[in-house]
Length: 278
Image (tube, rainbow, N blue to C red; front, side, top):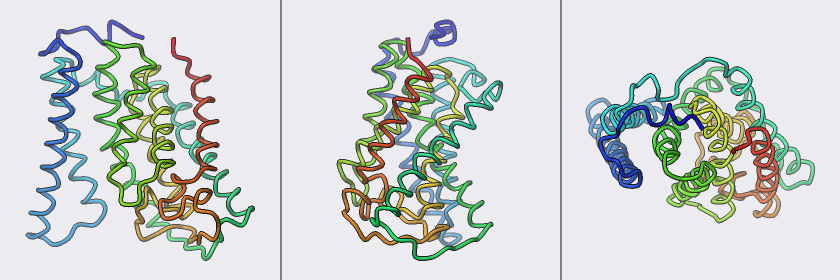
């Protein structure tokens, strides 16, 4: 861990846990404020599409974490974690590993007769459109969790414990999903673990954002699963679940599938071995 990078200035509040609590509350206020802004703006200009619904909370969230970084942590914004240098291979992995995870889950479910392909719906503009939408949604979660909370926790506790605690928080954030399941919780925690292990090693936010984007995009937009129980109204493949809900995930989608749980667990071991934490 690069101690110099993490402690080159004195934070406004010395206690890490108090800063975490204050930061979390401040970010939640920003998110709630963005939702209020969306409702008020909708009355003025009409309903927003998915770009608007994701961009507005992203701007509020980004503003909140950058303010915390600048004035609570007293660190330069250039150190926040958006460097592009020497991340090509990591970004490739962030795209390809979720493809492999979701593709394997999809293939097993189709070949075992648990799901059926109903239709193929190619629309290049919608495929590109949802890359942008899901990148915004991924950034909304990764900026505060990895960019701020995990980063400052690294000052106080063992790096592996930062992965554990932030992964648990990431999983618990999905409890509010309408069709939440225990399997979904475990899969989200494993997703958080894979992202968190990388972040401990590299301190770069592009991998978490792109990995999260790729996970949701190929699960929902490409292979036709719900994303945490939510449908965006378009997918390249339309599928129908005909088998056991513990295997297919049912209305939750692949994140509620035991098959995904096994495959993602194997992937977590791979990430851990690749980005070993000392």
